[in-house]
Every structure is written in structure tokens, then in C-alpha cells.
Amino acid sequence: MKKNLILAVMAALMMVSCAEKKSFETLNGEWGVVTIGDLAIADSIDAFIGFDVAEQMIYGSTGCNHLTGAMPTEIGGESLIFGAMGSTRMMCPDMTIEDAMLPALGVVVDFKVEGENLYLLDVTGNIVMTLKKR
Image 1: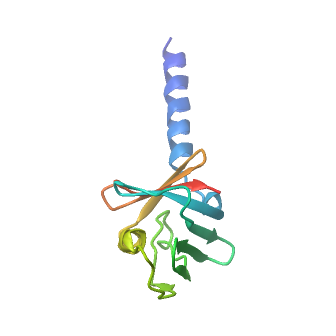
Image 2 (image 1 turned 120 degrees about the vertical axis):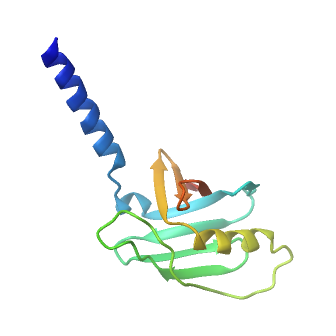
């Protein structure tokens, strides 16, 4: 009985430690923006974020303007921090998504991947953006 309990605890600890271990490789590719905070993004809008982990580059679109930047991560950690992003500066008929997306990226410090969804999180663990693998 005691041996079974020890084995069960060890198995649970292994699952937790594996679940918490993040790999930036899971970010590779393009992710369509589904939500920014409470703002739902229509499928017809081509807002996305792309990660090139090998080159440590981020690129994407707000649905109007294009984004690019470096993908700095916390040294020795598993945090994702968006640094300064470059952007084209076209005026668009509707700037709602862009006006929400750019500030949201500025508060992202962490992420989690669940299936085809990528969740960008703030310092308190709240979901800032939800993305779906394209």
C-alpha cells in the first residue's frame, strides 16, 4: 500500500514537471489571432503572429499593418517577452484590432500551448491573447 502511494505521488510529480516544461519550438509557425482580451477577431481578418524560433524572429499582421521584431526570451527561463516591434504605418479603415493588438503584445510575459491554441499571458497569468495554429 505504502509503495503504491509513493509510486502514485512520483508519477504525479513527473506529469506536473513535464506539463510545466515549455519548449519554444512549439511556437514555430504562424498563429491566427482569435481573441485579444474580450475582443473576438473574425476569421475573415488576417491578424496573425508568426514565430521563427531558429532565427529568434517574430513577424505578423494586425489585419492591416505588418509586424516584425526579435523574439527575446528571459535568459535561462521560459518566459516570452515581446521586445520592440517594427510595424508598417498604413492608415486602415478600421484600426480597432491594431489598437488592441499592439498594446496587448507589450504586456505578454508568458505563454502556454494547449492543442492547436496558443495563449499569451500577462504577469498575473491572465490570457491577453488567444491564437490558433494556422
